[in-house]
Length: 113
Length: 253
Image 1: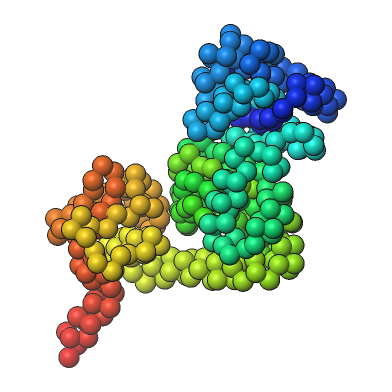
Image 2: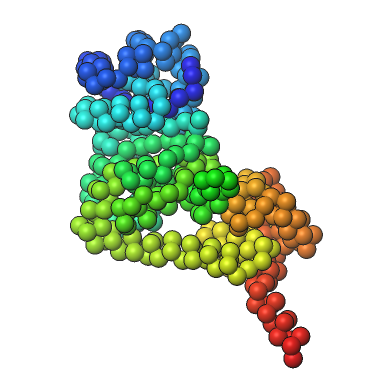
């Protein structure tokens, strides 16, 4: 996983997460930059080789350890993460789309260059 | 930010501790939090000054360095270190103009950010928020004034002493200074290069002055923490100009 910034949205229902991804795709967010993570589902580049790689990949995306544990506990409690990785502009754009989703809790993580 | 977020209550508590948000009702904090988002910046990340035209940042954890850079030479000057509870950028909030200053994360930073237009509206709508805003603005102006005075009137060694004293007092100096000294937490882990950028000098000069202060048992470093051992002597160093003028007067007489 390349060192980049990220925007992470937490969803309780998988259908809401999938709808949000569809919405992102209609607003010119590159499909390659979107990942969906759940305990039993994985799509995209983040943790592509399994959940055991989630730590490494999230650290590469500018997520601090404390937040990483928080996200992991959410995933293992049945929540779903929609992650958009990219540069400052790309993650800001993704944030602006995701924050409009009533079901999403969104945060943004900027990495050092 | 939605109330259902697992860390929502933590963020609300942290926001209520920030200088601009102290004493606000829970109802008002909840309303304000609905406009905020959580952000993290990794240590070393630096951002374009234009971000302050769009968003207003509250530091929950870590230190942020505000730097001005000469466009041709690349020479840097650190104007201010912000810490937990501080906000960025108070000047853009005030005048809506771009403030050409580079924010850099000195540590891993946790922040809340909200659209700056919204925060500007709070100043007009909520007198209790405005009541916190004015003294904070005064504090920031005083800090900048102190920097200008230091650069214009004092020698490098005095400037360094005044800088250490200023950042020590931001963390409030206890009345009874313990045997272990005063830990200047805001300056911990900073290289002599960064300290030099804060007083308009160079690394070698800062290094020489720090060594001299160590020899005089004014301060020491413990595990990258700058510890003041002799506050009185440091204050004497910080009063360098006054002493110098008095000694000159003595010579004239």
